[in-house]
Picture 1: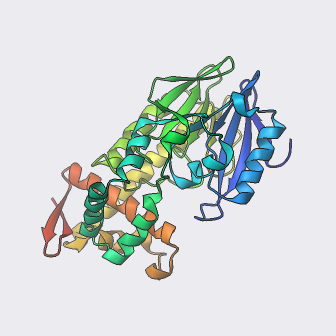
Picture 2: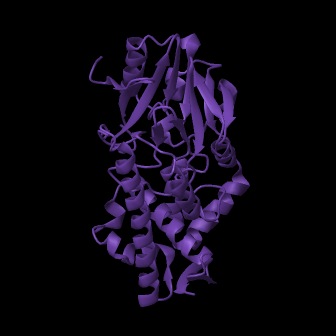
Length: 340
């Protein structure tokens, strides 16, 4: 195998293809090809670029995946995971994707929904020009063309087959409303998308649907901790060796760190609004110690700013939902935050 296509798991045989993100600067997306018998399943395809399309086509040839016997599974519809699909999946290809992801993609085509989301972002203290940047980016949600493919919505508990291999679909929502992962119970293998990452804490973005997205992410994170994962194939960053029986402990340890990280961030935001009552949501985010390294806000790349704002919205909305914070609307449709 080439450096771009590596065998990273045996029985089931899973190959990794690293697709660079040349547009939104997320680094790269680890995509995976499961091969069994004459069938192949591609899990995530990466962001759109000519170089990415070439790498994915080369990898599919290397593993002997025939187009007519290849299906696709998208963990979620963020652009760095699904954007390349039109370049690598033929029309009519079987594509598994979470039902809530399809709902979110449809909602972003509804002007009334978009107007409501825009107003919510302005209420957070984001000025209209900056909010427009994020909506021009479509909040990072791919405009998935359901009519082009045989799109199959999947939910937790469903089964996805490739050859004689069966994967359980796991509901790992939060980072995206319909984020789904694949678990091979016999080997303890989890192909987990962006649910658990070793290099960063996955952000919880702003999207149509749940009013308390952080609660959804934390709930699913606790559930996936108890699956018995011995090997995680995650979508970003270097894969970690989990041999010698230490895989489950390593995975559980990372999940515990992510849960603790979120708890610390919640405390930090609560202390910020207790120290300085009446800040807008954006002001809370930028006044908190975790934002101390963000010097010139307007010089930061748009996608990074979007991640900071969207994640901050999720934290504050969770504080309000728990009854520990209060958002009071003032003139201009802007909310200001206080300790409840």
